[in-house]
Length: 280
Image (cartoon, rainbow, N blue to C red):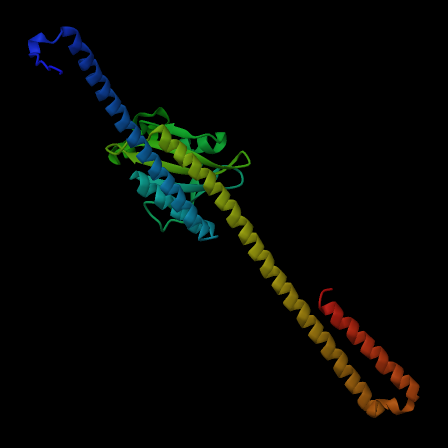
């Protein structure tokens, strides 16, 4: 028979209390770490979903302007940006063209002088991401400091769009001072989007070249067909005029064997032409 005794709180040894306090503190710290990890995973999930949506929209169109506009819109919506613009470089490197804009989708082909945007110029020349955490107080932007303060701009990020190590454009992002902080993970996400943008531009360029080549080939074939029709029409009319003058083509003057041989040669020639037309 087992006998159970009940001890009062004062009868518990003091050593048993310390481990309980330590365990409670560890549990609280682990809970904080778990909550932080969950928030990080949720952030990554949103990035992945945005990438999937960008890929879907990019695959639905082969016109690069539409692709760039959809990317600018998606980035602007994902981060709640003050500005998100996509620029493409021009030969010479002194100018770029603003081809897509989140805040004004009607802008499609606006020429921009790189000297007015030193952060954009730096990204295009170096091919590296430029991140300015406090744009209003950055020395390189003192010429537009009042404008940045009025617009409550917090940070500026410029991610180059590169193809074969050459910057062919850039994604320009600007956050609000009261908005969320642009983290390292966000910068890496935009770099992934820039890489996808470069590939989409390459695919769109190939499609447009193929479409142009197909159009040019079609025009050439139509031109050749018209030349063939014109040539045959000329010969037909020439022979009709010559045959009319000779009277029933004058074939009655030929021996029967010659006429049969001419018919055979014509049949052989037509057979060869038909085979060649099949492309064999």
